[in-house]
Length: 219
Ligand SMILES: [Zn+2]
Image 1 (tube, rainbow, N blue to C red):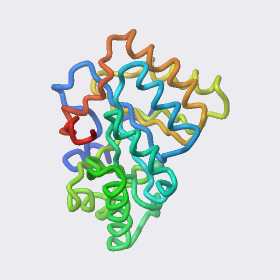
Image 2: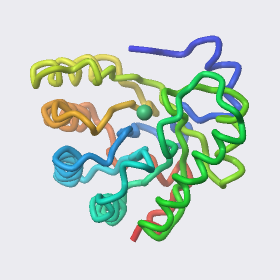
Image 3: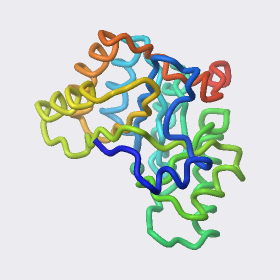
Image 4: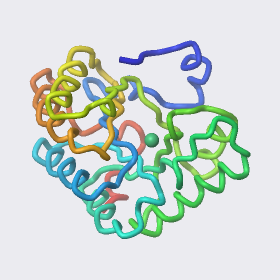
């Protein structure tokens, strides 16, 4: 599991990596790189089964033809968030190009669900001047993560369940957990992770209120 590095500490005032301390025994599940038909629906149904709310960091260019799925995500009370238009994770992008990419995603999300995305996450978590400045210009909080599940390594359901076990072994109050909804193994992972979190006493509303995301903006 990836944890705090020196770079994390240097950028701490500019990005959010954990829920605020008043979130208590909450964690935020975050799902990157969707929406993905055939995967995201199963994530939504599992979250609903556990009364859980999450943040979905969607890629703008993946929304076309999947608008209903994005609206369904928002209507279930989840935060639909900006992960750029093209997953522009080049290491040294032109700031203007980067900002345009982020703004395009901001606009398509806003048009699709009727409210602007509250949070941004830099593709691949790469921090540089453009990725630090752009979200604020568009009124978004930059949210990264404190616990990387490494779920993208999964190649079968057993690996998904093993990933859930590793997360449950290390999860702590206020963690923001990085997951992805572009692979089907996320379903097996959640089938173990969600009840496991509940058994450990975690509140599964995602701490979205503590992060400043008002519930009524998504309905
Ligand atoms: Zn991503």
